[in-house]
Length: 338
Length: 157
Image (cartoon, helix red, strand yellow):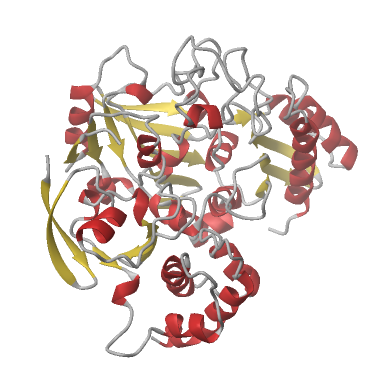
């Protein structure tokens, strides 16, 4: 690991100041010289791999007193960015009113990592693309813009089939983000210019021609909280993976439904493990709304969600798998007891 | 440049001078000679380095020592009292819950937290909540048995 300076941020303004001071505006956030340290489960790992090379670490854990509240109530939810995954997953009211959130967190990583990792860090985690993580490969457009992509014709079984470009097919690896995008979450952001709010759907950026730019956060900005309107007791997170626990998704689906008298009034569908960013399947939602559920409808919605999917040599199976996971998750959401 | 840091390990304050890059795992093993916590993958994937910080189990290989200052760190060396093993240690012996033993300190630390979190109520629960500790000898059935044996005693306190 390369040397770095370490400092503890005692309040949000100091954190933003410290991060902003070392930031170079033209750099993407992921290459900023100063990086915030929360749980450290991505950052320290990638620093050991020499993928991330910050010269300054700003430990924002002391901000937890301000930024870690779990606040359901009044038909809405606010989650502090420094709340730990395990705390949110175990929270009674989250399990009751937002099962898609509780399950997306519970089914991720291991108990140890969930005790460490924060919600803010979780949504900012980097791809698990093995070529991105191994610096002995020069050709990674995400690490070295313009260098090419070793995954395109390499071992790409884990890679994305949606939201891809000819520059990058790296999968967004997280689970919780699918719940957030499905529930139309808002991201609260602290920065030098003050606070701003951003729809969660605008946080992550598809790779396009700039796979090194992963989010719309600027250097010096920090996520302070996530906010969700409404309660979503009829919601599920279904995750298919190579082993039953402690593994990233091959394919996952976050579903939230509002069903009245057998008719789907509102449907939210997000897909994980198959796309370069947290993926909202709005075409599928449009097909579901106003309909009565049956297997044929689930199939049509899944076909619509994957209409633009493109597989490569090793990952084409994800298209069929993704449809089946989505259809099964819909079935579970419709039939669950609430 | 080394930085002064005081780590509280197994109830005792330890004053150290550490490079900022030092993880809790390396501070324990290389500076405090507490080699019970093991370095397997060094990337948070195997669980061999699991320790408790406060009452939370964490992987010490991804925890910076400087960030752990002021918090109570408990390692495998801090479990036994006098000549008496901790109930989870005794349960691992009783159930032959290891072969080579390399993952065992991490398994035991993780298992204690697993019980205290309330996640040891069934075999399925134990398997799910112990999945962050890999055992390449595959002693898993005996590990589950050990956790089940120790759980009531630990919950009694």
